[in-house]
Image (tube, rainbow, N blue to C red; front, top):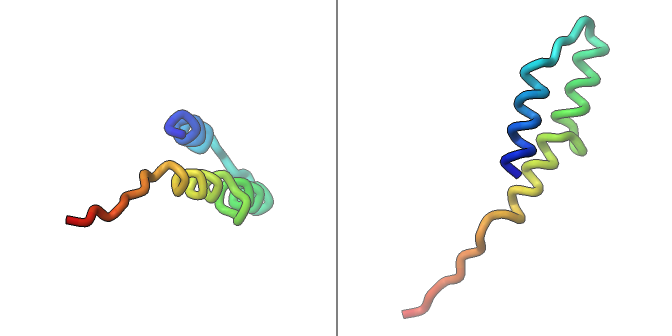
Length: 56
């Protein structure tokens, strides 16, 4: 998961948009419902450890 985040950060830091179409394409790729960042968020929920209540 951390490798994927690092990969996306490198990719995003090298992005350039020349016009509104480029900006929209990038927005869809990274921020849309099925985008890269949304996918990471969904995957992060499965990585969180579950905590069970301990009765005393």
